[in-house]
Length: 108
Image (cartoon, rainbow, N blue to C red):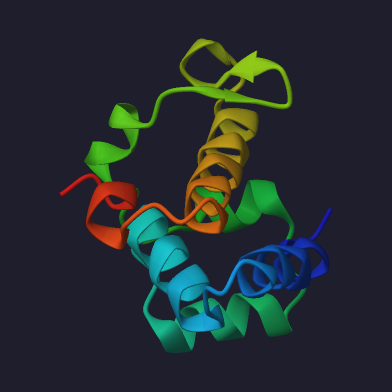
């Protein structure tokens, strides 16, 4: 599945709750280390999630601080690395949609 196929859903979920596309992009950049330009290039190329995370310039070391349940599963207990990265991203987007402050979402 490509990141670009899910990305509009992330943005729609955020905007429905009064948040912005820019905040979604900031979360993705924080998690992966992509610049805005390289993020947009990955979306344009229809990169699949496995490649997206494997090619990420710098996965944020603070992502291990992301805890909680997404789709009924604790993100910290997911053993498959790519699925865990996807669920980290899902969890961050959920926190954004729930109105959490960006500083807390980005584990500052």
